[in-house]
Length: 376
Image (tube, rainbow, N blue to C red; front, side):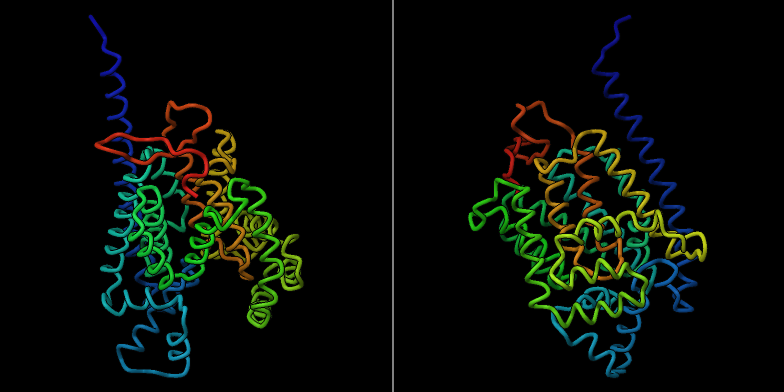
């Protein structure tokens, strides 16, 4: 009897795919149960924000106010400013006006994003999807009206347009991000600048990150002092580590940046309130932090946490920018989590040592390795 190794490898892939299909089926069933038993009742009593760590209640209120013509000062102030982080989720609820349709739309956006990422990189979905769904923020973004699911689409469009060199699609991604969450648009824009000829240190990634931190250290307190002061007052009332925020406001972001990133990614792991005054909000963010710990440990074990890897560099670059927020919100860092999951799921090419595990498709089905720094 002759055993064909190629058939064995093919069979293994099929078995893994079947296992992934089974896990995805279980996930969808559980998610539907959470939706009907948790999300729908929370929408009825306006507790979605507290129970699922999202801002859905605010978006629904604003959308319903516009639909019913109730333009009170709060509604006008919330919707009239620009840039505005409420427009896209409010628009979605205004058009759909149905929680089930919103969930279906979120799943469609999720599937589109995964398809784009699969067309951009050579990744193992068997690895990527379980890691991505491990984070409860992914689930809440699928079940509720929110910005995070749109951030995933923006990230996918950005990566696809960069690797495929489609500038028109890059412009679409930037405009979409500006309308959805302008902070993420700033992250993408500055990342593009950091890899362009405008940055003479673009090949020195550590130096570029340090330069970014030093620039933020002085620019933000000077240009946004009043805004930071206002948010600082809000942050104090929200039990944020005020010392770090105070350092940021007094030109010491260089000292606060790493602790602030750690606070968002791992803070709930040592937060006594999780056990003393437990709530679904705290549990969601606790398991969010646990997911980060797992993904980072996997990446560290695989020796992937190096700035030579474009996705890790993008994650680090974005984390430095997003850490300026004076509120503890791990979901602001969700794109960082996606990038780390992508880095782990990349299928390593058999290429020379000077290339990285990042691919673009070229020609008909062929894949070409990108040299270091080509993506940035």
